[in-house]
Image 1 (cartoon, rainbow, N blue to C red):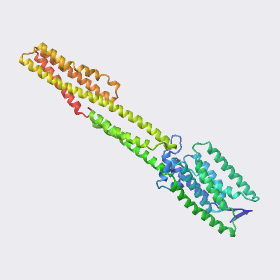
Image 2 (tube, rainbow, N blue to C red; image 1 turned 180 degrees about the horizontal axis):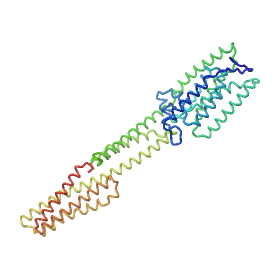
Image 3 (tube, rainbow, N blue to C red; image 1 turned 90 degrees about the vertical axis):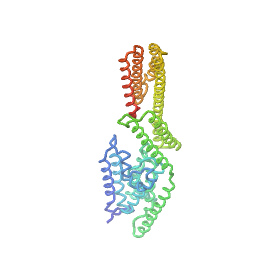
Image 4 (cartoon, rainbow, N blue to C red; image 1 turned 120 degrees about the vertical axis):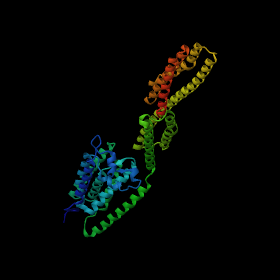
Length: 450
């Protein structure tokens, strides 16, 4: 059953409008039931998971996002404003043109709004039914504008549609988060369909009008595929490189943390840790950053994200490089200790031989042991004294080396006194001190932290 007023024909039923509203509310409840963001709105990750339009995913084959995003909303104010517009305009348009035509306009407006948004901002997460709702108002506006004197209902509908369209575009012009391209795409699509439906519903015109709508819908599908195939794919390259970079970074951070905490938290040996930083972690980190920088200047949200990621990468590389330098200094100190130990052992052997041959007095042996085996530890102690200037991973090891140097120096000083005084008890104590120092050092070097 229909009511007719001049050229304005109304059906008594509009089942699709409340159905669309119910579907959007159901999706919103599902999104809201999950963890919201800090401001109460849904997070970007949740929106994408529920079907928001996101260039790298949509262009990779998930074309259904062009439509599903019209049922996804981030917050209650967002969905409330869209559903009020859908209820007002949708009920009016569906009753005027019928459910099939209404759904065609709604879905095509949503699709082309999403497509326009994707073309303008492929790195932006698009969601909401505003493009489809504006398409409905655009169709109402086209239907209500008559070349001759319009009916009163037409004038009222034209004024309502014009005010809603103008206010929406005006407010969104001052809102940086508003999707102007999507709004424009949906509006123009709905307006085009409205023009195709402008003839009155009579037995003579119904068939002709239906064929026009079918032809326009088919042309829309062809245009949809043509435009999507022509969209730039650079965003896919950018997104892929960012994902690759972030994957590499996470692997390197995990590798570094594992190296630092291996062997019950003591970490890798000094040389192994330094080689890991020098030959694996730093080269891979720099190569990953170079690939990211090879993308050049990228506009929009991805460009800002790349800048932030690149700054973090440079800071992380700086930390790893400074740590590598400190481990290299620690490695050099260990080498100096090894060389000193070898030199002392040779000199002590020579001193023993001279004492046994009678060519060296105990007092002279005392002086020589101090010169060759005690005093040389002092420069090493000075070089390891400023461990607080280094990071904890280094300073703890420097502190251990200083303790070892002090233990070894004291043991050799006790041994020198035993030679001077020809005291077997002091010699025994010196040997015990050397043995305990060697045992400690062996356990320390066996521990991979050294």
